[in-house]
Length: 166
Image 1 (cartoon, rainbow, N blue to C red):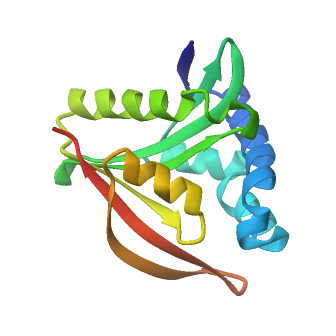
Image 2: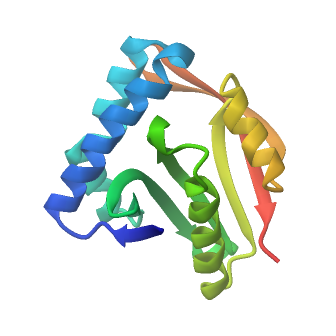
């Protein structure tokens, strides 16, 4: 069974940062390289960065499968636009293909319906093929391409994908 615990204190922030370090090193090194993974973890997924995001309106949830932490979500509701951005949805490699991602997406869709949010969107690296295919199977569509300088000579080269939450 999958559960979602809202991140509300330093202990849970530290848990997310630990999960981020493990998952990003498992999954993204082959896509963007170790140097960029290290940079992005420090700038975006360290305990300090997560705390700042929480203070800026982001929400984080720790995903557990059978009482074991296996991933996390980050989201930002754009109330004035009736949109929700999935900022993060990351799952440990050993928990993939167990329905955790589908359960997380269902959780996000229910949350967005409660908030009267009509569109869920995200960015995904163009070279993250399996993840892109998964989102396409879940009714997301590519609506835009974006290449953005994130500092220190690093760039993200992403698709913006969205789905309508009917």
